[in-house]
Length: 377
Image 1 (cartoon, rainbow, N blue to C red):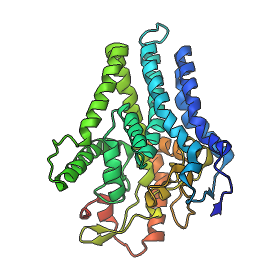
Image 2: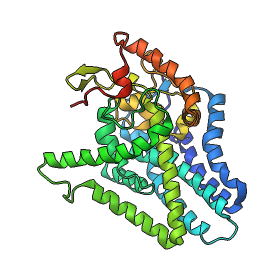
Image 3: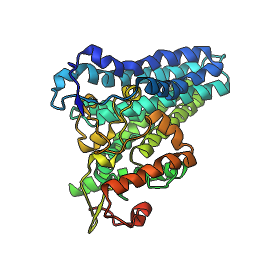
Image 4: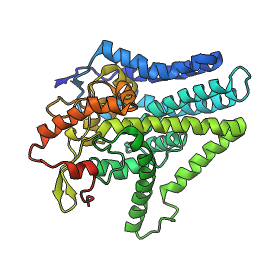
């Protein structure tokens, strides 16, 4: 594990600003129309996959004790993005519903691309922001999530996923041999239920009912309602449909990533409903350079779960001895996840190898596979 010597100045942060290039690109393809609208998913999926193949891995680690002030140019991109996304999303809703050169198919394709961006970049940046101590940053995270109608992701992620990852109580831990097309509908329902239950339980511990106005779901519903209303004002019912369509695609992109991040990995059950502490080997790690630029080091997911309070430039990379490694970056792996036979052929042997390496004493994995072991306390 090598340590980087860079000094956290603007030039070293610029690769993580590549996402901003998607904003003018999406406006450009909107003006062109026709098949050009497919350029956005092509860039985010295929171009960055190709760049990963060319640029290889980044195995260097920054000093995790670097001060907040030195990270200004890194955190700035996550603070800027919410406003750029808002203007782009609603500007495109107005533009698409007030021009005559976009066919119905072109509008569907355009907002498919918008959803790829609001999911791949927007939700990912919201994820970074919601983990920060600063209330303004957490507010920006809520702002981003409301644009994809998935505000409860904040409650689920912070109160459920990080606490119960790798156990049956976490709906977004993909089970061994569970294909994505079974995982996706299960997780949509499970995440909504678990996030609401977690907030309700937290209020109950304070002696309050779930109807108490401090329940963040009221804020979630209000923000999402405002976003839907603005879509209607700008584009009528077609604008609302385009908004909902991009939100669905964004959520699909998020849950594809969730599926990849923990597929088949489980924490050891210690008995009496208790599990071992979360360690780096409970998340799949990927050190691919270009896709980590695009995703602000999200692929260093092993360290994120081990140390959730670290900002993205300080996330550490782990070797194969400490954390399981994905063979490719997220762009390739999420495409593979859409084809369950291909996914299982690639990943199931790796899960079995992981089990042998970390838990050779466990002979019967059926309770873990079926998620029937007791829920943790």
